[in-house]
Length: 127
Image (tube, rainbow, N blue to C red; front, side, top):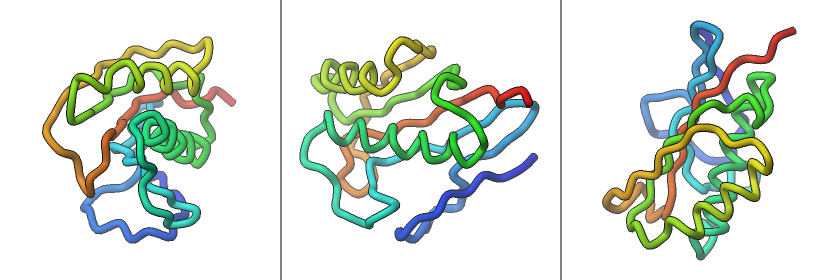
């Protein structure tokens, strides 16, 4: 196994790494819509928060030498099912023609008041 890290202005207080490579796959820990580059506060709405969380997924992908087209599965956690349409629209904007498998899980409140958290699994790029 090999860990994957990203640069961040935010302190990681959790007992996990952003990504873990094992068996030719990249497992990306749940990404919140935080701003690693600037430390700025969370965006107001679910649409922008979804794009921000996917941006963080992309940071981990790039750190592992992957692209978003390598993603095979995402788990998306939201506090209310009413957010599904906006999340789906942002997700489609991010992935474009690529359509990885996905599950959207309505849950209770998320860490730090976030409206979305996204974890992903991706295949490593062939060299």
